[in-house]
Amino acid sequence: MKAVVLLSGGLDSATTLAYATSKGFECHAVTFDYGQRHKIEIKAARKVAKALGAKEHIVVKIDLRKFGGSALTSDTPVPKGRKAKEIGSGIPVTYVPARNTVFLSLALAFAETLGAHDIFIGINALDYSGYPDCRPEFIRAFERTANLATKAGVEGAKFKILAPLIKMTKAEIIRLGRKLGVDYSLTHSCYDPAPDGTPCGKCDSCLLREKGFKEA
Amino acid sequence: MKAVVLLSGGLDSATTLAYATSKGFECHAVTFDYGQRHKIEIKAARKVAKALGAKEHIVVKIDLRKFGGSALTSDTPVPKGRKAKEIGSGIPVTYVPARNTVFLSLALAFAETLGAHDIFIGINALDYSGYPDCRPEFIRAFERTANLATKAGVEGAKFKILAPLIKMTKAEIIRLGRKLGVDYSLTHSCYDPAPDGTPCGKCDSCLLREKGFKEA
Image (cartoon, rainbow over all chains, first blue to last red):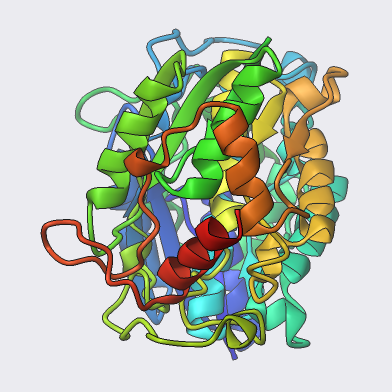
């Protein structure tokens, strides 16, 4: 059975791809090139897709920069050195307006074209409780929309948005990934790496990653 | 008050833009360049936005061609010479997988960045009953998703997806547009124009347009 898997090149989506593969899906990975400040994520996604045996991997350009409005797509500085308990409180400046809605919509278009009805996304409500589009109620609402929006949905198929990591801690995710053979050295998490790709070690994403590995 | 208006360059979205302007909105028009076979639509959208006094008009590229799967983005021939009653039955081959979901998601990202909460879309359930993503139940589901997906939604704003033409006939749309001063000679409807932009006169879109003008 075919599935579409959103792949960012980070730890969570790599684990999600490994999980989907372990469940017997033929995985079609998709990465969005949305005007991030660095292309290292996309490179990491390519390596991860290959290492985990994705059936194909496509990279789709979308110009979210046209809209501005986030530290990840504009020139707002990425916050550094926040404590773990600060990270989960409030919506961070690294929030990209409607990002997961945009990503899932495009994944839906891809899935319908492929004849796939399962879409995997590596979101996590625990570590990133700040992002509204990482919550289970968002996923359920999107799933309902997907089934009303599409020819396949109208004709009786049932699209499912699968977020297997949604309630896991970073440490649990890493333990799952290790069991499934994920090589985390291929993944990339930093929001603000050096030009050569070295992680800054201080942004929310680096800090959560480090904490996760320690705990795992 | 700011609003985002989806603008294709066709008759319906031009009327929608005129309608939103007449209701006092400061209109930010957005056109998607999604690998259509012709760029005439985008040119028409530029002229319409200018003529109707949009505050700004942005054109966002998305590579839906990567997915294939529709007569409007791939090399499937566009059907010609169908009767009006045939046009509304079944889902036509010109259906683009999840197109309105993709467009509305991007419009939502744009709206949130602008601080706008009203998104206008010129869809029509009557003439195009074949498209699942032109139905009121789809619009309501997307609206619900939008309010769960966004920082603005979580913080209490209420996004509205406004489809003022959804229950109008083509003739009613044209009469409304004329009242609002829309110059329909600027708009473009044909799915399969000649290289110089001349409409084919035989595709569903041309036929519905012609019928609409006759009836109006």
